Image 1 (cartoon, rainbow, N blue to C red):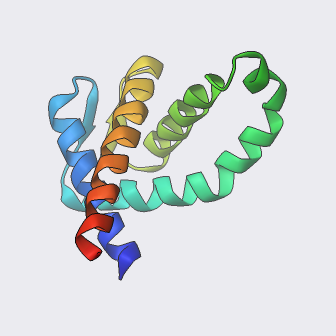
Image 2: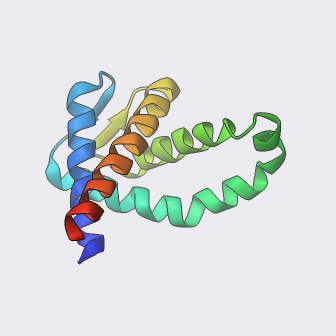
Length: 115
């Protein structure tokens, strides 16, 4: 049940960000839900491989290269999903940063309500 709530919250955040961020678009809530699922799968499967392959550059940049990896994951999701789009790397980077911040806030609020 917790996973379903997190997917719905993430889909809502994707809709919110696509509405207010120029260069990011999503066609509807179903597409946003698919984006949430695909991002979850990509973060589970692809992101650990990219993190391991880029350890040296991540160390040199003091971890800032992880933002680039997150933007690449967003752009990869853009290629997989027809109803979702980002216009370029910098929009994907901003989208990933804002998505991470909003998810952190929303998930912390969800945990507080459970207690």
